[in-house]
Image (cartoon, rainbow, N blue to C red; front, side, top):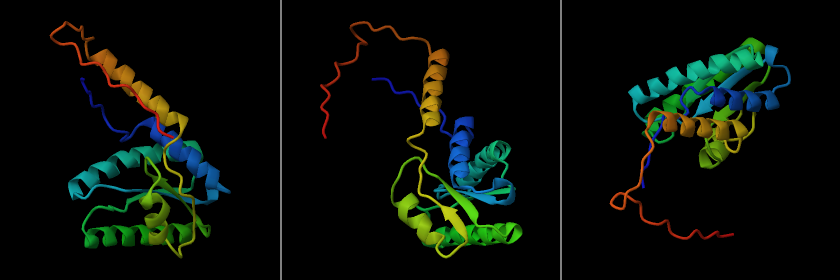
Length: 182
């Protein structure tokens, strides 16, 4: 079976739409509130910088679609060594406190995580404990915009990769029977 890997969500407009929807669901008055987008993030500093560059573009789109007075981004770098993660969380906490001081309103915090799990449900809430925030552990999935993003990637790869014809020598093995477990 051929597997084709496409680009990640990175700075996809669909990602910005999902985050906008999640932020608007928590906000009471976005024009007078700040938004903080928090993600998992990679261990490596260079990779982290690339993630932040993409997320700044996402934040610009979120700002245009929501009207939040201020939007900041941070990565908890959950799998990094403990001192690196601790520094990332410290910077996030300091930024949220500055946002709250500037608006005199609780800061809306939206996670940038694909699925639900320990990071979105436990670690981030513990990291942000006792801060003036509005937080709900809502991951990116399921959301129809993510399905649209997947569809767009499939169409894109179909346009850039020529169709394969199967000859007896290149035919894939039959797929095993599917079993659904409940």
